[in-house]
Image 1 (cartoon, rainbow, N blue to C red):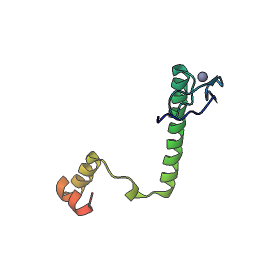
Image 2: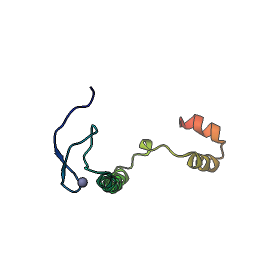
Image 3: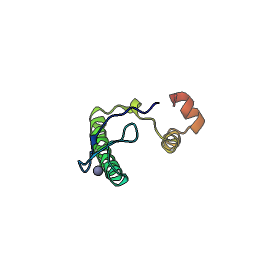
Image 4: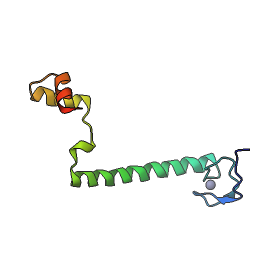
Length: 91
Ligand SMILES: [Zn+2]
């Protein structure tokens, strides 16, 4: 049996005690799981915002690969074809 019994745990959202029936379950019900997901999405969005702030401070151009549209624009600006620009810059 792969299932590891963890005993009774407290729901992360409503605090009700329940027996988890799947490995990493932290919520007692689908409703609480939905709420938990909603919260973690928001937390992740906030964390991302912080990351962006940090990367702006450090300004590391190699960390982020430009999109095809951005490469095309840069290639046009440099008077080169997309393929040539990509080759020359190792993108
Ligand atoms: Zn709950």
